[in-house]
Length: 410
Image 1 (cartoon, rainbow, N blue to C red):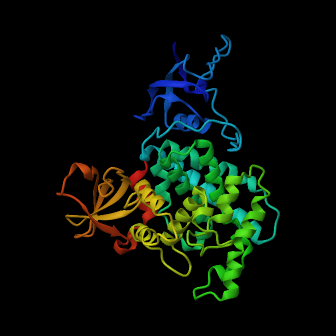
Image 2: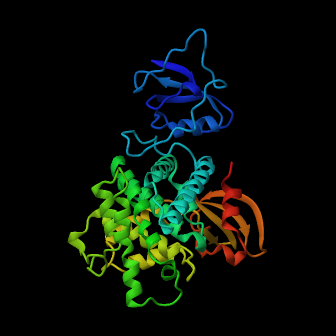
Image 3: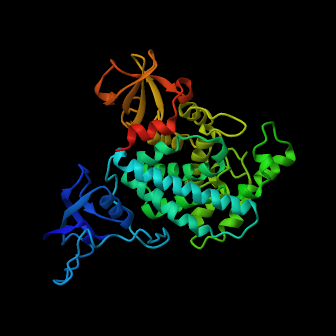
């Protein structure tokens, strides 16, 4: 049975068949709505009226009272509701919206998560008692954003700031792990555990002397031992987290272990390491290599991927290949140079043809000026248009943060 309802009446568990009235041209997939934040997003983006299938819904609409009919003007979702990923709740609808439609919300969620992570680290460095459960909302918003459109948050991992590396690294690792686990087809309940493990895996660095972590020259043997203790510190801090699971502990404790036994803290080798430990090792190193830090500039993603491929004794070669297929040879958010001296922003990967992603051309490198942006799918252009290589934004005085906002905001 089909029923027309207002956005104010839409609840998690209802099966949406189509949008009937909206202020924009937003498109979503049909299916069960899995989360309140997705409903909030639909409302913010101008959805007014929808059609639902009551028989396929897990929750039936409440018939409004004749005296006080609900309306979108008088009834709205409560933005103060907290969402705990440890609660038994169903994940959101997969890939419901485009990167442009998701980008603004993803940016706000990323910034909010970064503020929480920064505050948490600073409090830990000062020896204060902290409530690690504040990261619940960060993990849940990452999960929901990736399942609405995985590219939007992935783009934000390309932003670099050497002064906030310690805080960004945990957020970025969580985003990339969520994407990769989704690509591998993991159960959604397991994905959120990996996400939370990634958020918690480097908390212990707040307990390491910061002068050692930012030292520009080679560390001494004692300094290396001090750095390696961050794993034990992270585990001790994570034990305060009420939803800690064995899988999260595995991610936290084993993210620096390597296949040949050369890692730390226990020197475990291939057969002793779980798939989760092998995954976090790959993602952790990838983000560290591509990030700007106080003592080094980050390398381009393609160089980081080449490094991972060149180290089969350290990283699982099969998982590395799958990771490359997941994020692409030129990950979303990368700036690439095309034939014809044009620059483009990578918007979406192409897993069947990794060298031919979806892009947005925006700059004439020969004449050094911005041009009218144009979306292209390279797989439709044969050999007439192809990527020559990656470009660092500073080579053309491009502010990547500003560029993303200009090119992706709707």
